[in-house]
Image 1 (cartoon, rainbow, N blue to C red):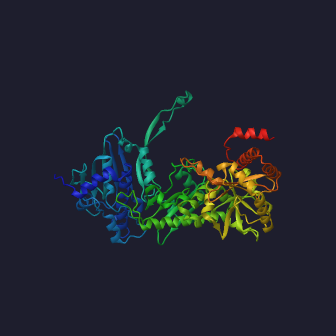
Image 2: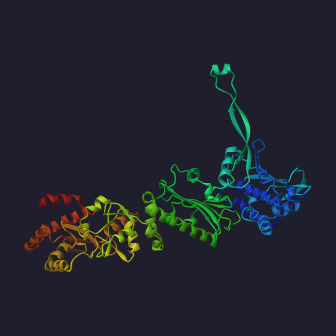
Image 3: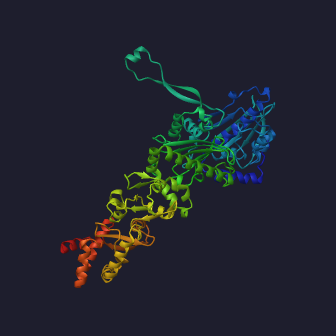
Length: 634
């Protein structure tokens, strides 16, 4: 019996594939089952036009046999089988699969899908087996042949006996090592879980003899004596795959409970999804998809450990558990799957070629998610607000990231708490409700709504009856700065220089007072040293004596956020101390300045500055000094 050698390039490919192409050894089972399904598909296709086949669709199956004593695993099918020449061509030369050629020649319709495309999946068997034997009999042939190999050293093909058409692949598993427990692949529960994971939607039944145990029948005497029952084993033939994917069924066949049950079972969530979408797309991208919005964020959602992505199937076979390329980061909360026959896969069927088709599918899915969220916002407001509480933060990060490239896609989905009734509003709702004379979309930032409502800076805006958006998340102000404006209305912080609310008379009055007290204001700024860039008279304060605002692009709230990050660089906003010229404290400061009591004026300046810091929710630099100043000046 002559041992034939693999061709040089096939030998190198085999070595590379065994050691590096596949990430997980367990996928060998997926590949062999997919090949068996291909073989059945070919004979089933033939049976549609050839009555001699004598088999209906219900007669076809893939069988799995595990023998722990012999350490062998067998995958058997009653498909088209192979002649000696086909064994030589398909198994002797790696990457020379007949599946793609068969599909092309026979112009198969969509319901006759051939999974295998490259002819290399078979060789993944050598990742777990020291010896692989293939016994095959081609349909219509009188003879059967056996292909046998122990890996890169070559293979033999000999004539053998086999009753019916089909193929058997017998793996003699490698011995267990410290790193790998190959015996796992003989355990019936492990095999069942792998088939459920990777091959659940192969469209022919995958069957296995499964051993169960049950209590033996007891006599009346044994029951009276309350003896513990003895157990006996029995064998039951089980179909391990569901065959028809939920996403390939017609929507009219399915109920809401079907989608929800599938989600809980498939994605191991204790909670039902908030929303789902069943997509069947044809055109530039042909795919089926099930997309789910969870009702609650996973515990690790906002951590580095969280992995986004949709499950990716090719004709019902799982290719990738989390394909991150199918979801933009701002929609990373979406769970689900995509099944497409159009994807270009590399030889391991495990990694995608980054081709146009993948980008087309991803773009289509993004549009679907966006449309579903807009529909939920419009028609199911309570449900959308529930979603927003769980995942709104991620959407706001989407506005800010990538230099605002996606802001127009997301801006209409944003929600912020409003000063009117403390309820969530969209930007469109805010702008629609603006009064005619209102120039800006006003916002205020702080750690909580309660703290924001106490900010002195909000007084003037509220007194004019204008709505304020309350920003309580760290990312909020960065997101609005990125947006800059919405529907031609500019965003304006209540701490900004020009709120557009002061009358020209009021502005002139403040300007005159500032000119009159210019020396005092300059002296106060000098006494505070580098703590503030300047001290001014406030146009915004009504009842409060003092507040802190900022100049430039960095606000006080942004300063807090940036400095909370683990970096050595410390950011400082250009702080401005504003004093209320209508408050009695202004008169006290003016009197001290006029009498030349610079020491006491400096103490008042420090006290007012510390007071302004506390109002902003910022730490004072010297609490002991602050306490002593209060006691001294009281």
